[in-house]
Length: 344
Image (tube, rainbow, N blue to C red; front, side):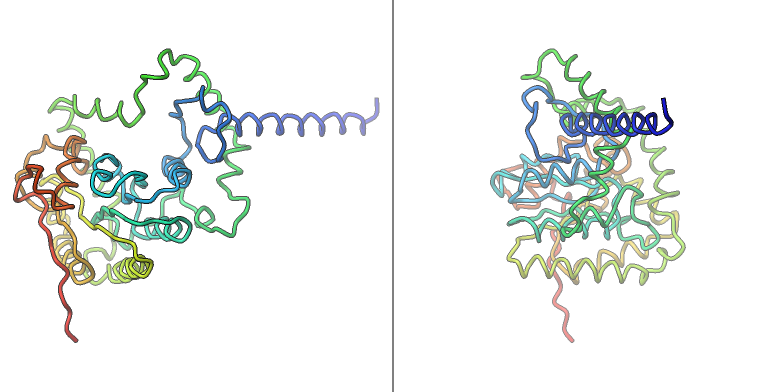
């Protein structure tokens, strides 16, 4: 047999392999990128992802939300049901773990220009405004560019070897799942684990996280200079203005963190920038401030770790934001700060 024959065999085999593999990945759709319902009655659980933020973004797109929750993983721990109590149904929680303010603005800008968003609840974190914090390695401007037909995410979701492995894992998970109707979602499973955590586990997680944040999210070369956040504040103000031009209601709050985490800002030389950040926020918008020393943040065990509050505080947080007097809330937890009038 000729060399050309084997070239044809190899080429056809390669094409067949990639076609079958991409079709398999498309059908299983482990990252929920593709908007189809093939086998949706069978494939209920998808716990394997190359990027959590990728999945969250595409799930949010699929839901065509009326109300949007956005922020880092700190809002991800909270329940959309507690927001729907005040804003109505069709609320999506688009939490973006570890995202700086640039990423959050890019995602938000895409959503408000693509969907008919009516209300936004935005959880702000001090570290997100760190000018030295780069975009996450899995973030791509291509993802939020509406003019890109075939995005890099689609290529990864179809042709990546890792995706194929995750597709097989997803398939096996659902075959082994005995009770599909009553199975808990991954978020519900996580929340049950969090609520059952022991104090020693929380202490350990807090210790690890304080060190981790100091060496990543709060690591700086300029962040200790309060004026270093001006560019991020300007971009934040700009997206708020765009939302208001579109008649979108915006509810801003600062995420609660442990008192030990607030102490960290002073310890590593960021206290002045933290104070300046809050003042600048109040110059731009009204907001509810949970990032203070109070009866909730002073108790270490109200948190999973240094910065993620226990999920059972979700109703209290949103009751405070939406000024629901029917829900009993600590007076010192969540201080409403009305926007200051700047006189030229």
